[in-house]
Length: 455
Image (cartoon, rainbow, N blue to C red):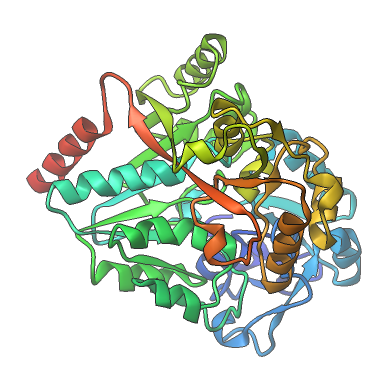
């Protein structure tokens, strides 16, 4: 539905404003840029599915714009069909990521069978244009290595005497009104914002480097603030979503540990097809056959993209603490849950440095963590670092402390023992991107900056 059609073209069968429901994670952005000031639609609800504890809340009226006199409810997605019928919804807009193409069409079938139309909003209707050069880092799947790639890009830009500012994909876990625009420069800023583990995992590594991070709910306002400080804006994507901002350079990271997923998941395939640069990461741990499958897939979907091979290098502090010990491995939550990975860098480190046993965390899980294992039965070897709020962080702490492990091997990007009271020794595992051979990111970014300077 493009601008330029007559008002009647968008009206529902009742001759009134079309009533729309928007599904999930990027829903607020899609609302803000496409629906908020659009008199042809009335958005009656958002749904929640991937983010815990957000359902049954409301989108603030002050963020919803002049067309809305009331807050907009956020409902559990399980209530979608009922809402379509009860609210006489004409249109449902799918707005979340890291789900299979088959899942998307099953959701479309649910919507269509309830009588509404089904819609996907694309880049032309949702990307904001920046006045500053903009590099976006996206992925084929959650856990492919976006964060380490963003850190590598930022390091290179600073080496080139640029002042990059990172803008992170939204994580709307707290008070939406207070989080309309967020700016993080120091660790105290994270404390004041009551950031969750998931937020800290994304922000802290940048703050350690002295990089300012922006995030929020209203990304048109976020972009304006970021532009005041940046020579170059770096979009740090979430899940496998495509950028909220129009990139001058789009880097997409794909993962040969999950060969085929780069063209079978939404909207990861979109990122592969749009990319200027495709990084095939983890070539140090994936099999040659898997790497070959991924290389063939990305070349078939985007033959013009420049392909960079890279490894995800693991760095372990005090590895001698692992040898001969019973280890509880903690991994990045989203990567292990809806990202579909059964283990990550922590598990590899525990095996490499000869832990005597990898403790199975399932029997010790409490509260929402117990439900997490039930929802993701492929996770049997590691504990996902779920921490979407104070209660879940408390449950994570209780689960860790009740295990029989001698040592905690934590491969989250932050030091959990700085947030939780852990009664065991902890070993921190981090991972950084390292390009293999040519082309490499430094050459790519040098060419990009020269092009920008030439205009």
